[in-house]
Image (cartoon, rainbow, N blue to C red):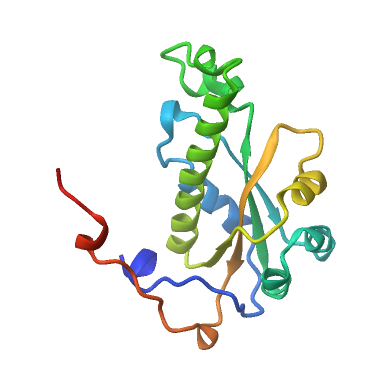
Length: 187
């Protein structure tokens, strides 16, 4: 639990250690087992590693996220496939789940957003389980990012997450969290 939650932190400063493609594959192969509704699995990931790819990402970043993202060994763009339901005959073969979504744009948007966010959380936990630090963020221009990385596809950016080995000497003190009684109720 310490590695995944109580001692894990959101990082903004990175050590100059690379993250291998093999490790990124291992992270995906672990996170893919997290549950989604009707196994819809709408998450799509672009791992931005090369200097050229980082330069393509740069114009979409908000000023406060620019330096830390450019310094991170990897930035994952976590997107949602707005045509995820096309894959349901393979992913959820026990029902005609594709028909639940086809033509129902509000249900598609809601399901894609909710379940790609769930998968994004599984992604962060899997990365932490493999010893990486994470810096998830939403400070970017989604239109610019979608235009640069997803033009001509059915993918839309949900959030981005820097990955690497965080510099623990540059962490802020941990921010407060709510207590159970502050936000929970047992009915």
